[in-house]
Image (cartoon, rainbow, N blue to C red; front, side, top):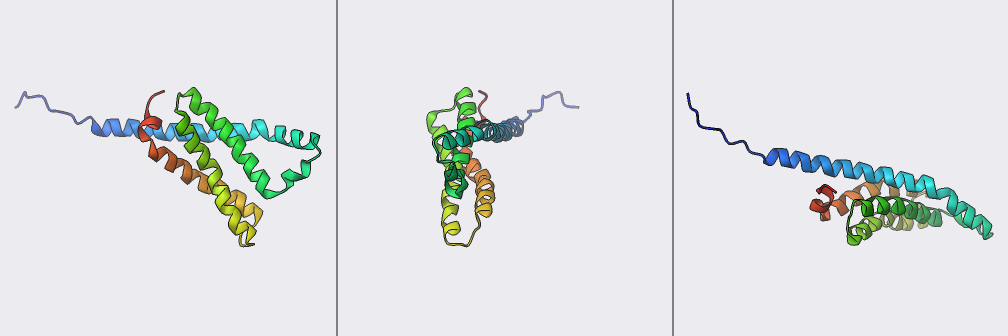
Length: 144
């Protein structure tokens, strides 16, 4: 019987821990985006109505941009609290707006309904967010 200690490879444990932090951070950002939409949606309506321009929010393009702004606000608050760089916040903000901006084109062409644009934008956003996180894995996986 050997009494030589067996070396344990810590790499799989570190990778699991990093991946867990990435997933938790991703879910936290989704929650922060939902918070931003819920907390600020009525503010926009109130402001536009007070300015006599409430009908603007009945159009799909401004409404999509307002939703992206609300989500970006909530997400940026969380990211700055977690001490993420402004660059990472800007990249994640782009991930909020880009899907809607891209889907405006098929909507304008009549290929996609406004509801389809909203739904598609939110679904694509999940991927653009993951892409932004992939650009800075160590920043997002780091304990803040």
